[in-house]
Each structure stands twice: as C-alpha cells, then as structure tokens.
Image (cartoon, rainbow, N blue to C red; front, side, top):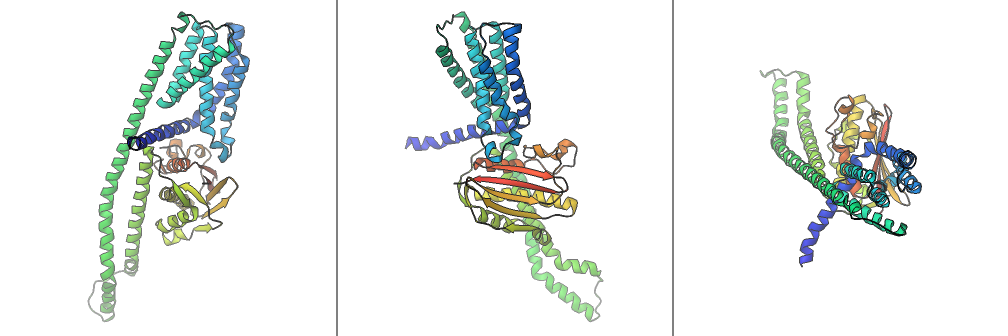
Length: 439
C-alpha cells in the first residue's frame, strides 16, 4: 500500500524531468545549428592545437572525428522528416554526453590531470551548466565520467594516477553541484511564474465570464419579448399611431441583434476556454492519455468552435478512413481550435481563402493535414512559430498573438509521442501536418 501511495508522485517527478529535458532541447532549437557547427570545427581544430602547436601527452583523432560526426546531423536537422525529428532529443543528449563529460574527462585522465585539460574540463562543465537543466546536468556528468573512467582503465596498459592528478575532481564536482543548484532554482522560479500565469488567467477568465453570462442571459430574455415588440411596432405604424420613427437600417439590424450577441458571447467564451487550456498546459504535467478517434475530435472541434455562418462555409472536411491514436481528446480539440483561429485570422487579413482538413493513414504514422489558403507566413517568421512567447512582432511585424497557441500545439502533440510541422508560402497557403503514432 505504501508503494501505491508513493508511486504517483515519483512518476510525476520523472515526467517533469522528462518534459523539462525535451523542452530544454526545444529551447536551444534556434542555436542548435550554431552549437553543432562549433562542435564540427572545434574537435578537429584542437587536435591540431594540442598535437602540433602545443603538444600534449595524449591525443586521439578518431575520438575527435567521431565527436564531430555526431554534430553533423544536428546541423542539418531542419531537413529531417517529422518521423526522424522524433529522435532529435535523443541524438542531442547523446552528442552532449559524449562531447562534454565523457570526452573531456577521458582526455583529462589520459593526460594525467595536466593543467591544460583541467582548464578544458572546467570549460566543459561551464558549457553543460548553460545547456542542460539540473537533472540532465547531474545525470550527464555521472554517466559521462563513469564511462570515461571505464574507458581509461580499458585502454591504458598501466594506469597511473597520482594523488595530485586527482586534486581537480573536487573542483569539478563542486562546479556541477553549484550549476545544478542554480539551474534547479531557475526551474522553480519558472514553475512559480507558470503557476502565477495560470492563476492570473483563471482570475481574468472568471471576471470576463461574469459579464458574458449576464449578456447571454439578457439576450435570452430579450429573445422572448423582442419579436412581440417588433410586431407591435409594425402594427402601430401600419395603423398610423404616433410611434417614434426608427430608421429602416436600424430596424432591420434589431431583428438579428440577438443572434449576433449570442454568437459573440459564445465566441468569447470559446476563446477564454482556449487561453485557459493553453496556459494550464505550461505546467509541464503529462496529460492523461486514452485511445481517441481523430474523426470524433475533428467533428467535436467543428461543432464547438464559434464560427459565424460565413466562416463555417470556408471549412471543408475530407473524410477518409478514421484512425485511432493514444492522446487526449480535449487537448486535441483545442489544438484544432488554435489552428482554426489562426487560419481565420490569416484569411481575414487577405480577404480571401479557405480551410481544408483531411487525414491519411500510413504504415507507421497517421497524419492530420490542416491547410488554409490565406496570407501565409513570412519565411523569417516560419522557423520560430512554435517557440513559446514568440510573436511576429519580434520581427517588426504586427502583433498576431501572445505566442503560446502554436507552442501549446507542439507541446501537446509531443506529449502524445507525435510531431507537428508547418510549411507556408506567403500569399499562397499555410499547411500544418500533425503526425500521430499508432497506438
């Protein structure tokens, strides 16, 4: 019974570490090409430095070329297929594990703790602190140094480590502990900020829902009496009674005002729901996964989204063979809400366009393809659209949102084990491809 009580918090803790590690990779997505390029150049370059210019006791060109080779696919990861990008976090962490703690500790041991490699190892620790969260930092250091010691003893005929050559280890351990503590404190600050954001969003939503409820209730009450009042006005006017004159355009608009009020209230409530779900998903908790039907999710989204009559006519659905996936129906519906909202905004910007939704099955993945023929996304904006809190205002364009909608879509689909990719041509189309793994 004790195990059952303790297990859920432990699983929640592991889930938080996993999601943090994945988001750490996504956070450095824009810098991955630069970091990979540095790794490709630095590994062979410093072989020349330490072998020819300032000779050291030991060097290994094969290890350096292997380390440089690990960064080559990372530099060209933008050309990976969505299925291949699913393995990007694993390659990223393996490349860092090999090139930082393992390589530098191994070379430090092979060079008998020389001053050059003590300084190099400290630089490697500094880079790890910058790139990794606290849990990944500790695990990388422990695993990397352990394998470095094993490799040292396996490749050294007569291992010889003096007490003086080990004096650097407490310094490295202290740097790792200090860096992990600093990163953990930063993580806790970010978690508290996210909790505050969720709490603030909830308070704002409550304050907005109260007047919206009053407006909806007032519209419902008016619906019972307004037709009778309009009919009475028509009769009074037809019989020549002295009634105030109402311009015809205003009179006609009154007949449809209740529909507009209820539509706008429903639309506002839907947007509030969407923002709340988006904000709550930043808590980094793994959603509860069940087997879902993609067709059911799409039908629910199209039924619940507060389209105007004209907007609903812009959406076409190409129904194929339904497929199931392991996910969360509510979150999937809100992914579609975000995509629909963005597409309608881009269509409104150009005054033309339509939305098409279709899905297709393959041997390994099932795909949902969401396409609109609106204004499109500028090339300079496209690489950043899934970054949290990024808006096109960062590139000097008009503000199009808070920068959490598409980041929410990416986080949710990643938690399902899938992926989301976007391609776009300005003034042509924008297409999102959502890949769901088969359950």
